[in-house]
Each structure stands twice: as structure tokens, then as C-alpha cells.
Length: 146
Image 1 (cartoon, one colour):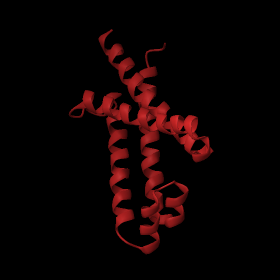
Image 2: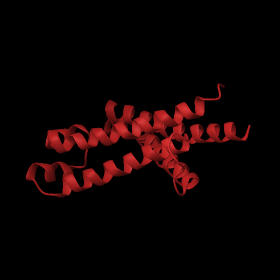
Image 3: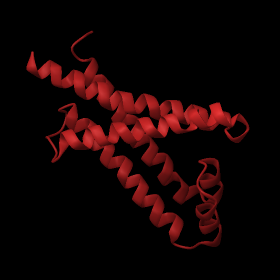
């Protein structure tokens, strides 16, 4: 493989994570319908409808996590400086993304009536993202040792 593929995978992971944060933050502007379309739990959609602080606070919290994940991907790609706990963070992020990607797929295999097409597509995207983090980091590390 070409030597820059690991960096490309990490940049793609950063873009997906950042795009997810932006998509989540868009709910602050678009309101309860946006939460529903993005398959937020019912209590969050109700919070947005009722105008309580729960939905926006949790939205900002989750979006911040996705932004941090994107920053770690850029750091692993050496586009920005090395962040603390880099190795642990990248493997933890990759694990969470892979699990998030597998969950709808295994649910679809067991109870296909409970899973819609959007959930499957989102699951596949997160599975790929987790693999981008994992494989990208491994490939980038191999590049630096050669």
C-alpha cells in the first residue's frame, strides 16, 4: 500500500467524527424534529419539545466528545501535535466506533423488524470509521518505523 494511506484513514476518521459533531449541533438550531430524525432517544426529543436544558446540554456534551475524537485522529496522523494518552485514546475510540458499528448489524440479524435502513447505514459508517482509526493508526506507526 502507499505510505500515506494510514494518514488518509485517520483524516477520514477525523472528518467523520467532526461531521457527526456538526450534525448533532445542528439540532440546537433546527429543534425537536432534528433530534427525531437523528434517532435521538425519546426523552431527548421530548426535552427539546418542552424547551428544557437536558437536550442542548447533552447535545453539546456528545458533540464535544466527537470533536475530541476528531482532534485525536488528526494528532495520530501527525497533522497536529501529539496529544496525551494518544495510544490509549486511539484504540479506545476505534473500539467504541467498531462496537457502535456492529450493534445495529447484529440486531438486524436477530430482529430485522426492529432495525431500519438508516440504522444499518449509520452502523456501517461507524464500523468503517472505527477501522479507519485502528488501521490508520497501525499503518501510520509502521510508516514512522520504516
